[in-house]
Length: 111
Image (cartoon, rainbow, N blue to C red; front, side, top):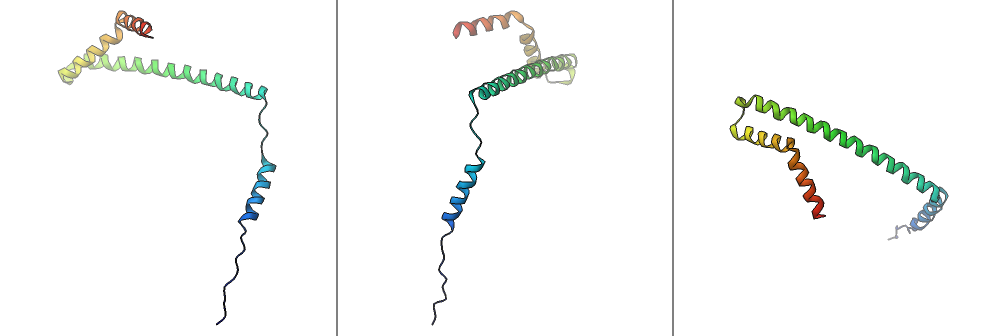
């Protein structure tokens, strides 16, 4: 019987070499220090914008939450007494400026 096997030549080495050549041609040069500084400034500025937008959204959410707390209290007959009590407590804590200032001062002393 004849041996019908075909000898396989590895082509992996050739493809790797071709890939290396192609990536060497397509490499992007590293940015200069000036370009990096500009990029850092842009990212910092964008971060500040996002922080400001987040703070605005958080403030809006807080006021919306206060609206709902007041509505629950106004319509207390529609809710459980325990839930209404929790809403009243939260509302009092939110509106109690002296307690908030005390907590802020305590946090500052602990740091």
